Amino acid sequence: MPTSRFRSDEPALDSFYFELSDKQLQPLWELHGLLTPTPRVRAIPYRWCADDLAKLGRRAGDLVPIDRGGDRRVLAMANPGLGGAPFISSTLWAAVQYLQPHESAPAHRHTPAALRFVLDGEGVYTLVNGDPIAMARGDLVLTPSWTFHEHHNPGDMPMMWLDVLDLPVVAALDAVFFEPGGDSEADRTEIPRSTAERRWGAGAGLSPVGTPDLPPHSPLLVYRWKDTDAALDNLLEVEDTNDVTVRFQDPSRDRDVMPTMRCEMRRVNPGTTTRRERQTGTRVTAVLDGSGTVVLDGESFDLSPGDVFVVPSWCTHQLHARTRLDLFTTSDSPVLEALHLHRSEEVDS
Ligand code: GTQ
Ligand code: FE2
Image 1 (cartoon, rainbow, N blue to C red):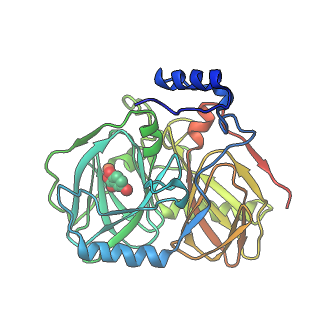
Image 2: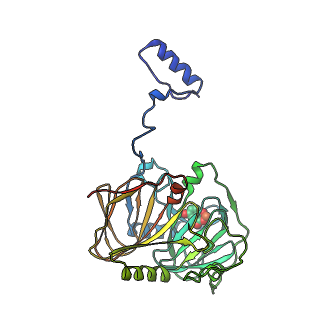
Image 3: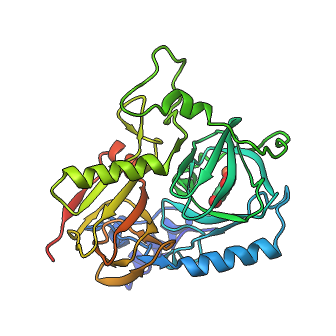
C-alpha cells in the first residue's frame, strides 16, 4: 500500500508527490506537528473514582472466572485521549486487579515490569520468583521485568489492588516477551516473611555484605506501609513544611526501585495548597487516604480514598488537601532521566 499521498495545485509537484507516495517516501516540508515547541501529549488529565473501580471490580469478580485463558482479572484504565488504547498514558499501563477468596492467578513472566500498590484490604500474597510476599494496605510490591509471578488469595475476603506496568514503553521498543510459568503452588495459609525482606529489609542503612549478583532492580521486592508511614511522620516532624515526600529506593545502590519506574509517597497536611508544577513524563497517583482536590491543567478533580488519577507529561499539577492526604505516585521518570529528557518547572499560579 502506498504511504500518505500529498497534493499540490502545481501539476509537476503533484506528480512528484504521487511518486513519493508510491516509493514510500514523505516530504518533511508537508509534515506538521513533529517538532513541536513543547510536548504534544495525547493523554488527558483524568481521574478514576474509587467507588466505580470497586463496584466494577466486584462485578468482574462475579461474572468472569480466572482460568488459564484469561490469566488475570484486570480492568485497565484507558485514557480517553488515546483513542481506545488500554493505557493510562502513552507510557504506562494502570489497572485494578480483583481476586476472589481461594482463587489464584497462575504464574507467568514478561519483559514489562509491574508494581502493585494496595489501596485497601489484605490477604493476597504474590510469589515473585518463588519468594512469597504478603500484601496489605499501603504496601508496594515489585514484580520486575522477567520475574515469574503468581497471585494467591487463601483468605475468605476478595481483594483488589492497583497494578502499574511499563508495558507501553516496552511495546514501543518492540521488546515485549511473555512466557507462562509452571504449575502454581497450592495456597499457603501461613505466609512467611519474604527472603527479600530478610536480606534487604533491615532498614536504617544496613546492607548485607557479600551477597551474590545483584539484579537490575531493587532486590527488596516489597516496601511495607508501617515503614513508609513512619518515614512520612518523622519527616513532617523535622521539616518546616506541610508537604513531604519519600522515594522508594533500591537499598543496594542509589537508584529507583526498577529501571523504568519511580515510586514515591507524599503526605500533605490539612489545609495545604501545594506549589503548581509540571514535569516531563507520566505520573499515576493513587489516593491511599484523605480528601482534597487536584488541579490538572486548570481542571479540578475531587479526591477521595481509592481514587486514581493520571498527570500526563507537561500537565500542570497542584494539590489542595482538605484532610491529610496520603498519595502514592509512580512515574516513568527513570526513563526520562536516563535519556536526559527529564524537565520540571514551577508554574506561577
Ligand atoms: O498481575 O501479572 O494489570 O501480567 C497486567 C498484566 C497485571 C499481573 C496486569 C499482568 C498482570
Ligand atoms: Fe504479569
